Length: 356
Ligand code: HEM
Image 1 (tube, rainbow, N blue to C red):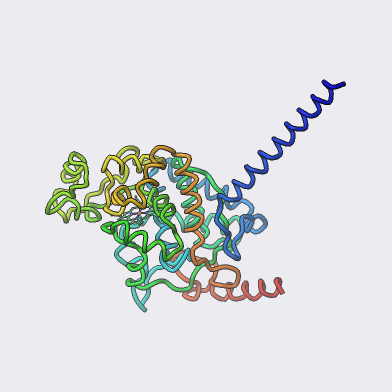
Image 2 (image 1 turned 180 degrees about the vertical axis):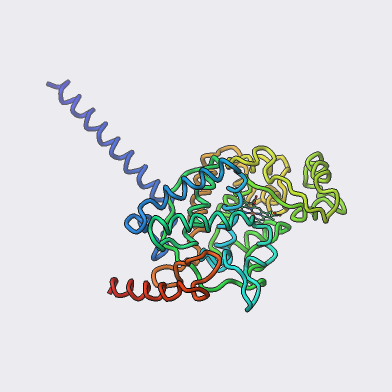
């Protein structure tokens, strides 16, 4: 009799433990996401465009199979969209007679032309499947998420429902919001703090430099007239071979250990003084960020977890939702400039009517 009640007690204890563990995991999962911006949701297109995520992923798998370098271009495009005027697709807009666009501002001149084409191709595929319901800013956010996953990084859900902006930022506003690679950690921390990004977010997001390339002029300030003493000697010597003068247009990889794989090797580079930009390398010199760099270099899962968190924060910066903005009929032109404007107005009025 005593042994039966003992077994029941053990069994109950086990059940309670399992239940508690599941609850704790659930709480941890919940904590691993920053708050969701008003108007965005994780189920936004479930009814409006149920195949959205599979269409984007299938197309990007094809693109990256041909050229994995495009993944880096798409990740950077989302970053440049979000940091300037929020994630509103403004970086995608072409300039007009009224002036040059955000696209034409210096930091955006090295965005890949192909990245813009990929976003527009995705938009066309989605319009065919669901009508014009998915915004260019959501497509850019999804493409960045898939770029990370399909090059070896973590997979994660992102909240959707962004709307496309009607304006683009000026050259000066673009420059003010995208710090140059010659910035030290103080400048980067101060700049990103204005976007509510803390030092862990800053170090995590800089890990985006685990894939992709840079042109010489983004780092020749560290090579000429003399080599930055913080830079590893051999690394610098090889960079001078790639960039023989401070005006060459050559390129080199951002992460020498695994340039096309989304992993934590970027942080290992920094610990070996092989970071390309001052903004990267100084993260390992500054005492506020050094420990975070080390913790990511020795623990890839920790980096992935913090990167996802920071990307979710970045991806929701000043988003337009609900009745704001529009759903563009062409990612590089706002609707007022083409015939789709009227449809957009009618759509907005209809939506407001349904929601009343
Ligand atoms: C923290 C401040 C940052 C600075 C100063 C910075 C600067 C730069 C520069 C100068 C380049 C090379 C441009 C060129 O010469 O071609 C670059 C490339 C890149 N950046 Fe950043 N970046 C920053 C943050 C980020 C963030 C937050 C992400 C994404 C999460 C990111 C992702 C990338 C990627 C993927 C590339 C390679 C692009 C390609 O291969 O086409 N960067 N960045």
